[in-house]
Length: 459
Image 1 (tube, one colour):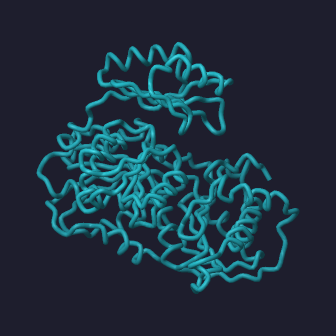
Image 2 (cartoon, rainbow, N blue to C red; image 1 turned 90 degrees about the vertical axis):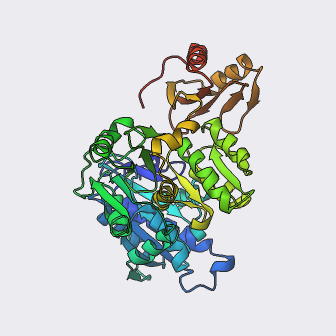
C-alpha cells in the first residue's frame, strides 16, 4: 500500500496508481477495528453503536471503492449502514441521526476527477485526523498481508435524503423577500442535494449550473480558484440574480458572489454572519481561522461576542467550537461550522443562513458586504522554501517590533498591518497571508516579506 495517501486530515490519492480497491479493503478493515474500539459513553446503549456509516461521492470509481471498503469492514465483524451517494455533511448528520460509532465518506473533495479518497469520522462525527486516530488506522492497514477473511458483518442500505432535508431546512426562517440565486454545483454532490433541499422552496428561484454527474468536471470542483467561478459570475449578472454560490466536489465548502458577480471572500462571509448569530446567541464565542481579516474580530467585539482565533484545519476548528460552545465558526477555505449541526461544517446550512440574512433586507448583497471590506488582503501566497523553520525564525527576528505568536507558523501583528506565515504539512512550502489598512502599505510590506521568502509560486 502506498502510505503517501495518508494525509493530515484524510486519505487521498490518484485512483489506480496510489489508491485502489485492495487498499480500500484494508482501510475499511482497519477503520472498523479502530472505530469499534473507541465506542464509549453515551453511544454504548444505542442500536447502531457498533455500526459504521458509509457514503460516497459521484466519481466513477467511488462505487467500487465503497464496495471494497464495506467488505473490509464486514470482515472486521462490523455492521455497515450504506447511505449511498451523498454530500459529506450528510455523513455527519447520519452518524448522529443513526447513533453510529462513526462513518467514512468516499471522496476526493475538490481534487480533479482522477483522485479519490476517504474522510473518516468517529462518534458524534468528530474528525479522525493524523493526531486523532488516522495514524492508528494507517498502522493497522499497512500491517494487513492480504484481503481475505470471513464476512461476519451485515450491510443495511438507507436513504436519508428526506430526513437530511428536514435537518437543513429547520434553520430556514419562514419570512423573507423573494430571492433569485444561482448555484454552481461543480458537477459534484451539490448537483444531487441542492435540487432536493432548495428546489421547491417558496420565494426562492433556483438557477442551477453543472448539476450533472458524468464522472468529469466542467471546471475543477475547487471554488477557491477564482477562474472556477467565471461561469457563475456571468450567469448571476445575466440572470440578474441576488447572489450566487459555488460548491466544491463533496459540498462541504462554498464560495459566494454578489449580484455584480464579485467574489465575497469567506472571511467577509464570516463577518457578515456575526451580527446574525450573535443576535440570537448574545455573548457567544465565534471561532475563526487565523488567516481571516481583522474585520472578523472587530465585528465580533462590536456585537458583544467573544472572538476565538484558531489555527487552520477542520479538526482544530471543530474541537475549539465544541470546547468553547461557540455558536458558529468560519474558515478562509469556505468551511463554516455550526454548534447546532453537531459542531460540524455544512455547505447546505451555510446557504440557508445566507438566504436568511439576504432575505430580511432590500439592500443588495454588494452593499451589505462593502462596509466589511475595509482592509486590503494579499490572499494566500505560496513560496518554495526548503529551510522552513529557519526562514520563520528570521521573520520573527526581523519583525520582532510587532506582537508575535506561534499558534500556527508565525503571526506578527502591528497597529495597521499583520501577516501570518505557516508551513505546509506535506511540501517545501511556506504560505503567506498579509493584510493592511491601505493598498500602498500592503504592497510595501509584501515587498519586505518577499525579500526573505522569494517570489510566490502557483499552487
